[in-house]
Each structure stands twice: as structure tokens, then as C-alpha cells.
Image 1: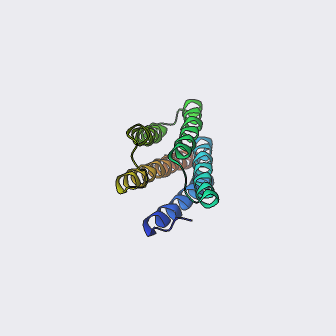
Image 2: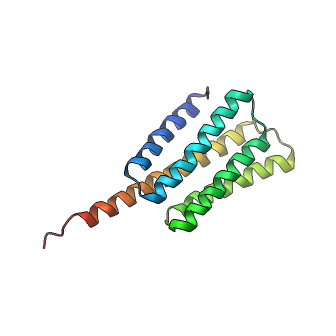
Image 3: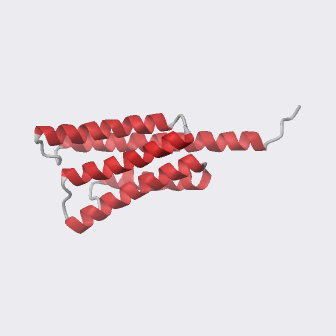
Length: 145
């Protein structure tokens, strides 16, 4: 389990955001939440099982998640998914930079970029869910004319 207070808070906020997406989101939000949830669970379980996770495993985990989210983006064409794909592009670039340069992925800069990036993904998911929810409630309410 993550030990940093900031990472624990981000994990808890992510769990709430994923629950919100499953509860109030449309199909795009639910599929995206499922992809992110699997990514989170895989990352946590790999750290618990292996003690330390190699950068290549994180790279593969995030790459598979980005591929799944790309399929969701193409299938549903939700505008908020553009933001998610941008954040996953940043994540992918960060992993590639650290692997090519041979840098240790346990430094502060890696943690900072990773946490800000994941918070951005979660923020996009929350905004997308709120917009989808609002759109459905607007359609369901009869106009008062």
C-alpha cells in the first residue's frame, strides 16, 4: 500500500472519483473508470507482490491502459477524453525519458510528474462524468414554457 500521505490522499480521491463515474457516468465514463481502476489495482498489487516495480512494468501497465482508453475515446468520442489522452501521452513520454536516459524512477521529479499527471486524468474523468450527468438530467426535465 502507498505510504506517502499525498499518495494515499490521491488514491482515496481517485476511488471516490471512480465511484462517481460508475454511479453517474454514461457508458464512456464507466468504461474509462474501469480502465483507470484496473490500472490502479494492477499498480498497487504489483508493488505489494513484488516489493518494488520496475519502470518497464509501469510503462507496460500505463501503455495498456492508454490503449484501452484510446479504444474508449474512438468508440464514444467524448470530448473530455482528449484531456485524458493528453495526460497519458505525458505519462508515456515521462516513462520513455526515464528509460532512455537511464534515470532512477524513484526520484522526486518522477513522483511529482506521475502524481500531477494521474490527478489530471482523474479530474478529466470527474468533469466528463459531471457533464454527462448534467446532460442527461437536462434532457429528462421537461421545459417550463
